[in-house]
Length: 215
Figure 1 (cartoon, rainbow, N blue to C red):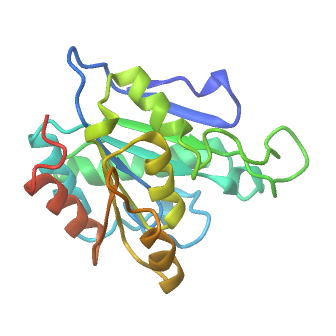
Figure 2: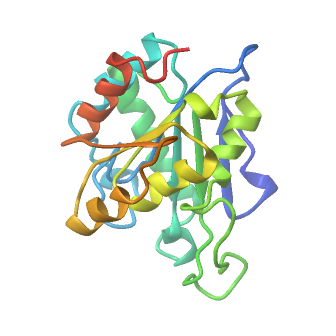
């Protein structure tokens, strides 16, 4: 993957190579889906991989389904950590995945937030910040992804809302609160399927095994 973060101080983009033919992908939120969301995770020592996720991603890798992380990182705008901290966390995540024979095909992050500290990262409603679809669209453009056959897994309604806005075919919520379940129920329609799963690993395995993102 190529790190092109330097084009914009509030954005992070590591993209794998573009496929010759357009292919569907699995989009994943990070905190609460790949790793435990302990609140503004910006240090390597705070990373706690969620059970079964690495093995589930390895199944997607074996099926040649691109796995793309799209994550809001307001902690950077809020001054809780910086991009070096984000990078350190990603190194640990990559190492844990590698132990299971798994890898991510792309990682995109948005640090902009309306409640950030005074400065350039204090921006409201940036196109890349979920529920806006900017990260998904950027990945699709850079990697030749078929969004109409792609899926997203998140732990917040805004994760799935970004999928709807990007034209994905469906999304799975890992519910952490009743209000999130209620919010996503309104997102389902004839073009976007909404599902609920008990865990990230269960959601990813179901997507792989049921052929939702098979190229």
